[in-house]
Image (tube, rainbow, N blue to C red; front, side):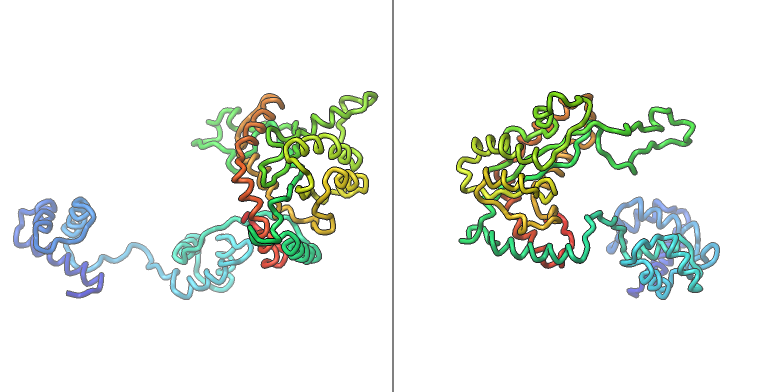
Length: 386
């Protein structure tokens, strides 16, 4: 028996038609039963599939393939598929429409459907480009230098003599948390037969021009999140220090002086209570200008004896420090939730903050050396979450 699929199909069709000729009264049902009871029954997943195959053969009454309707498919040749691959694979902004237009300019008889079929045959998938912070060549070089320096100073292997990441307190301010839920704008749509069928409430989405938001301050160490019970809401602290003569409607911001006062008061009190002896704590904060003013540096030095020095912490290392992952996790937890007031939002943030275990925090801190290694290996480019 031939192993060619086309020859096998013809042989099977011939056998079915021969059975019909020997038994004129048999229909597809009787022939299917006979085939299933034979010594070598055809391999079909279901009886219905075999019955359908037999029914089609009896209807067509011929062994050879019927001619295809319309013009033969000659577009997706090996040469054409290779041309599609060269035009679309690992090419920036290579859409189906653009590739089709490019191939037409090269003289190919093509269409968008043909490009799509070729792309599918090549098993190519669309991967959305990831948004990363913009880095200059100078910043990339600086990131590599700082990454090597931090690995040399604080160690790379957990349990080693030089390993000090278990003493680091990684702190930072968060981004804005708003009352409105954060969602993907591309998913803000409604299925309907016509746009006229969609009511106004579903057709539109209301957004405030100036949304109310809050900013947080917190940290991460081997002892867990800091502060443990509740992170610090920046807006509340700024209201406490608001000058009595100032306009209550006017928003106040962090400055170098206020950050120094923030460190000397609320951070110092909570650190002394929760972290024990601060001699064993290595403080780390961001490279924001207000945190690098001399008054702020003096305040940190007054409270924390040890710290990661400003010159040992590049300005563009947000993808290395795990506190950024904490802020991202909090925002992901709150995604889709709508709040009527700030108190509801703050209560949910406090609940989610308490769910971070000490073990999880230790695992996140232990990833810092590996992240620094990735920065070095990738030539200073931004890394994805390790």
